[in-house]
Image (tube, rainbow, N blue to C red; front, side, top):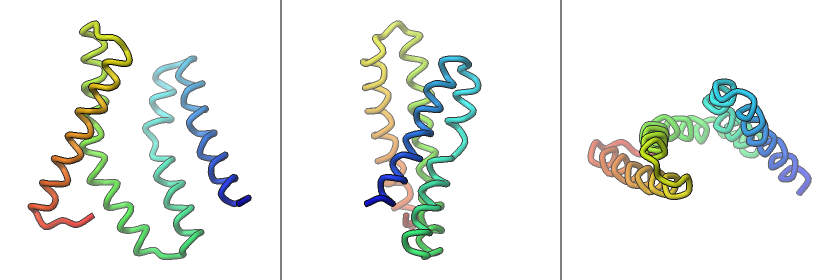
Length: 116
């Protein structure tokens, strides 16, 4: 239980750091957020928990393929906000578009014979 609590606390610190840094400088906040710290932490936790490098390799490959559709959120959100839509409406629409992009990517990967 202590180990799980430590993992949650360390991961939460990253989210707060991005939020606080973004208040001062959107560029610095974006820089911190764009570094794959969450992915790296997930790989570290997975290795510490299992010692299974094949699982880490599969996780890393899956992350690579699923980063591509996640970019839909970062493209659609500023477009919708600049078009004058409410923040929460823009966010919900961007998330919906991103979910659609994930399903499309999974379909394309499956059709190409690529397993995640």
